[in-house]
Image (cartoon, rainbow, N blue to C red; front, side):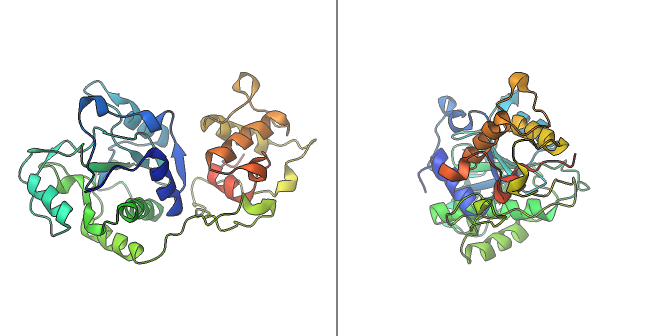
Amino acid sequence: MATPLTASQLLKALRDEGLVVHEVRSWRTHNRNSKGRWGPLHGVMIHHTVTQGIKNSVDLCYDGHADLPGPLCHGVIDKRGEVHLVGNGRANHAGLGDRDVLEAVINETELPPDNAADTDGNRHFYGFECINLGNGGDPWPEEQKVAIEKVSAAICRAHKWSERSVIGHKEWQPGKVDPRGFTMDGMRERIKRRLAKAPEGPSGGGDGGKDGGDAGRPVPPKPEYPPYEPFPGSGFFRSGERSAVLTAMGERLVAEGCGHYKNGRPGPDWNEAHRKSYAAWQRKLGFSGKDADGVPGKVSWERLRVPNS
């Protein structure tokens, strides 16, 4: 049994575990608390979205649909291994499930078969949707599975739970098949190994010190596809620099809600609008002071994922 983490506590726990986390719109106050109780919390539930594409999947999980209002989970884990937080509080993700399963999660014992739907899971579980079609053929990149492992470990650490507090939707509600494509027993074993080690997350420092280092902050692995612009060095961002890379950077900043451009249109010339926009991105990542001066550093650049121009 546990008191729900606040939005700030959840965000810190995830980032301390070494995850790249995006805050979506008003996620901190987006919930279904008016429709039912939230807490006490007993575990983490993993789902798949049956969708493709990051924006489409994140928007659906934030907004929901006509038959089921959002949020449909607390966070979306994309195929790059990044987390998009969409809700904080009660969310429409678990539905009714088996009371015996809940008791096993509480006691952290072996799970019984889920053959009943008599208990409100939305009240008692954090929910994370993973972008996957769930057809058995859509691949699960290793980056995504590592992120599932890290998300689960982060919340388990925060509540002093073991890996047995993490279940799949298919282990909770009769008839559900998600997540399909890996076993929950295998995932719990991964979480167990991770919990035996110290978290990977930030230990202080700034945005690479503007020298290309990471100052103790985790840098996500560069994926093979799609290709992203490598960090060009902080000296690249100076008055008079003109490049399509700057336009691509600005477009990513706009997509992240950090754009301070006239008419929302970034251009190829380094200017004050670019600097202000990038400073907003650094602050969104948790940087402050001289580490949020608007001049890109290696850590924040790699997290922005600027596509090759």
